[in-house]
Image 1 (tube, rainbow, N blue to C red):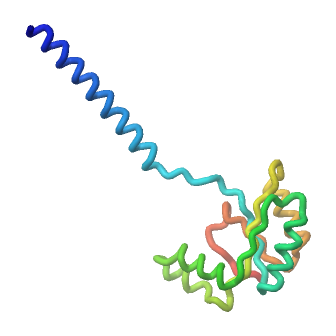
Image 2: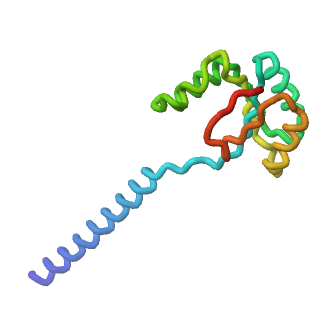
Image 3: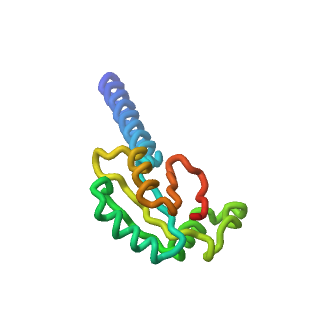
Length: 141
């Protein structure tokens, strides 16, 4: 009888250890936030009208997978939300100075660096920003 008790006790310890291991591994994998790879390039325009025209032009470009326009007001609101706890960043812009942006995603197989060169050539008066490499947003000129 004591041998049977010892076997069941050991089996219980092994099962408990397995359950704890599964719970810890599952909890750990859920708690680690994996950010998606940075792929977008921002094209900043001085007005909403220029941004809308730029969005239309970019949607026709075969190097562009997706072009999403954002008015100055929409962009400023997103910026305010993103930097809500950083007064120095918030002081850099106001609704009148924030650029209208088009967030551009390269088409599959298109090199981001080559796309940035093409965007600078196609939109010389726009501000081309790489959010993957640029920690802050500069106003369009």
